[in-house]
Amino acid sequence: MAKNNKNKNEVIKLFFMNFLKGTVVILGIIIVLLGAYLGREIYTGWDQRRNAVEPDAGVFTESQIDELLTATPTEPFTESLYVEGPAEVDYGISIKVLNATETSGLAGSWRERLNGLGYTNVSLGDSNELYETTKILVSEEKQADELRDVFPYADYEVGNVPDGVVNGPVDGINVFIFLGNDSILEPEE
Image (cartoon, rainbow, N blue to C red; front, side, top):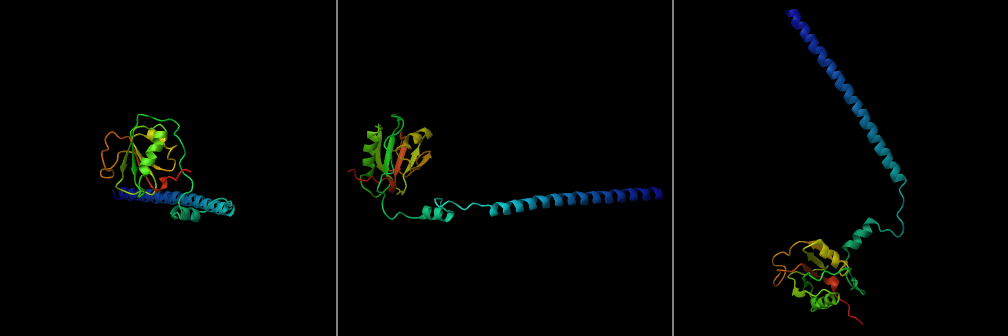
């Protein structure tokens, strides 16, 4: 019986020793493969940096782009950023033009322009917030697509107008146009 236990212990010992040897061999293979992969990545990364092309003189650098994005305009626009006329007009939509600037009469001027483009259901109001950039809130994406020709530089959003942002009723309105400082019209000559 003692000899049988001794043989059992030797078999178990032999099994674990071979198991550990196998594990060490597998880990060694993994380390070699990982080293080869990382070496290749380091070398190709160095090769790409060495062969990098200098940007063209007409291309902005990241710092220049950051500077442009954070710069404040020093003088008003001299040309209108808006084009004349939408591609197709959905005459059934109801638009509320809201003055979100301190410029008096801006919403009325834009209502006249929209009426001239075929939008006839246009009402006016004032925003409780001021905007630098025109924001257009639509109930459906297709309405935004129609207005992009008239307001190409506006920020568009699909959804409902938040409570307290607009003075007056909002029921039945499909499109809210919050006119920002970028929508101030230049006098026509």
